[in-house]
Amino acid sequence: MAAPNVSSDEIRTWFSRAMSTMYRAEVPQYGALTELVAEVNAATLSAEAALRAQFRQPGELDRLGIERHGAIRLGTATELFHIRRLFAVMGMHPVGYYDLSVAGVPVHATAFRPVADAALHANPFRIFTSLLRLELIEDPALRHEASRILTARRIFTPRVLELVSAFEANGGLDAAGAEEFVREALETFRWHSDATVDLATYRQLHAVHGLIADIVCFRGPHINHLTPRTLDIDAVQAAMSERGMAPKAVIEGPPRRRCPILLRQTSFKALEEKIRFQDGQDGATVGTHKARFGEIEQRGVALTTKGRRLYDALLAAARDEVRVDALGANAGDYDAALAARFRAVPDDWAKLRAEGLAFFRYTATEAGIAAARLGGLPEDVDALIACGFLRIDPIIYEDFLPISAAGIFQSNLDTDGQRNVLANASRAQFEQRLGADVLDELDLYAQSQAVSMQEALAQLGVGQSFRLKRPA
Ligand code: OOG
Ligand code: NI
Image (tube, rainbow, N blue to C red):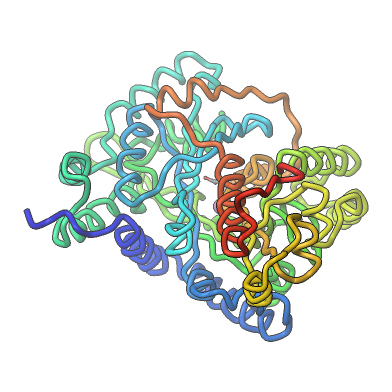
């Protein structure tokens, strides 16, 4: 083998491009949606000067154009264990634990994504990866049958596992290995229009939960959506309806704001696709299955623990006040209730920072660096910002939101009514199956903020004696 010299960032970019090409060929609506998002992003950028300034940072526009997340659903602990190894080749690591049982969906999940700022900058490709919780199937016979079917399948090609082992042994792959890895890894995520079970088994599992049928009855964890990032989700949502795509009734997450926070998402419903089911020895029965859908998202600033608590409380209050059903009744009232509740969150970057609600990246400005040469800068972050010597930019939220994710799941399982069910998290069990701990997203944001602050202050020559007045 030649030197293992292809970076994980490169492999991730090749892979996300290959995945996007495969998905576009299979689901033409995905291509239409990405074009719509590109149009809206261009229009939004030309209309909003502040946003333009944010995206003038080197590489930001390139990143926006390629940025995607996808999702897969796994069936067994072994699958989760090996998928972690496979994503590690692409520099994607498990961040966060999401308990979807909060909304009656029998899975828990993590997101595999790049972690370092430079890697996120190169390509923030993420895969929301959930694991079926078979123990939540009540009927013991059916639970046993599902487990038997899942244990028998192999979702990885033998070759991709060899390449993962080579990566682990050598600390990288050479160009030929990396190309082969991308080709082989793609197989795991491919759509199969033939089920591994007969129609009767499919229907039985589907009756328990649509998600269980989707996970158990197929050869592998088909990628079920690839989501582009938009700068104006309301504009895309409106245009989707005009172009005959049917989005779900409400946008998940926080309301529209001048200073976006966390993540807003909406999806259009899954396609009904023809499936050949096994039927005895020689035949096949044709039926249908819904799995693949379209989604868009708008990302805003990452919130601190304090900000996130406030977000969770306000969202819960709005959801208690107005319940949206599967047909979208009350969607308008819900949006109004949400907007009203969120007036409690300042819609201003400086205030979000001053109140310790969100994470920011600090940069020394040219004026600051010039002033530093003359000496005597104030040893106080607030004063440095006020003087225009330090600039703040929101740190973008790179993760997901459990209640939003549950809403996206449900809109594609024909159970679109909002539900609030008692949580039943089992992070320890998930991590044991993963074979690793999930990283804490809040630690990652806090660290990026701290590093940027340190560098900026060092540039201004006030790094040494400086004490943070307000730890975030
Ligand atoms: C995943 C749904 C969650 C998101 O963006 O929150 C999701 C799935 O349906 O498998 O994609
Ligand atoms: Ni998604």
